[in-house]
Length: 157
Length: 55
View (cartoon, helix red, strand yellow):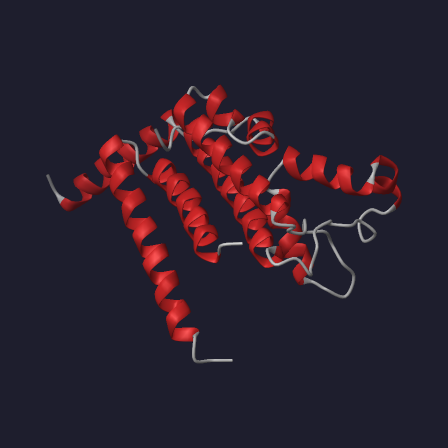
């Protein structure tokens, strides 16, 4: 086979693969994966991975809270607080429930976004460790969302 | 509060997560888990010792 022939065969193969996999991922699936750690993998039939991801994220989040870590919330004059908010928001429903628990339902709407308290105790010995666990749990869950997206599109097993 | 225990616990959680994220076979997962766990624990301890003289 000539070089051109090889190239066109390779292109055809790639096009075929694109048509077989690819496609759009249901937004609800991604939302479910984010909101409840492990749920997306459970829906996709990856039960063991679902349980492991769910357990890891819940353990990291719980450890962070028990160590008096502070949930990331946006603060004026502090652009880095948006990064911590993004990382903590990755914990899904755990973050939302914790924020409502700390602020109360009324404050959520009146204080949004800069008036929200993140809880935690900066003078506690485990404060920095707790923050690390909270950020890590959220970021791992966001990676799980990307993994579920790849599985749904057929790019991964 | 035991700092070493917290480091170990964090390393275990992250290692388990990435082992299941990146590997599909039980053997592959076990190997990656052990590799990342050792790297994080030994690396963290070594960095701690290296930082010890600094204020």
